Length: 145
Image 1: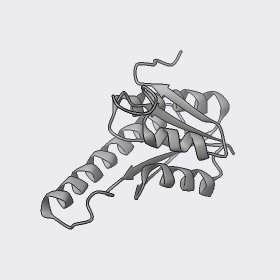
Image 2: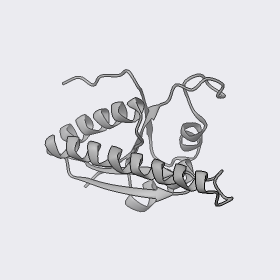
Image 3: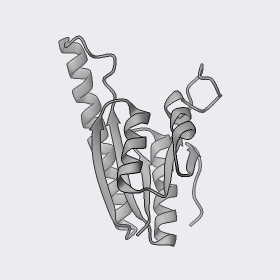
């Protein structure tokens, strides 16, 4: 069975990417592997404010995973969801290798000041090092029915 890995967070871009992946999986019979990553790279000091920020990010990722899982299940798509901690791109790439993903789907975040307009550093890293195709979906994309 083919597995499509989808990077998930609580952004509109992530939900657009999930919609595209769900539509693709429904058409092709693929399974979805939803992966959210809590990046606490800057929170190594153990300060209470940093720990609260990490917990808030975990809750947002868990809610986003649950939301997309429900959408996929409503579409009849077999789905697994996981939450990791660490560097986002590295964890996505490791998870794609571990589950044998045939494709990675990511949302395009609109963040000014990155190397390429509309492509964030995590997405660039995944594109550069992925061993499978990477589909980057704009936040405002609506997949055909």
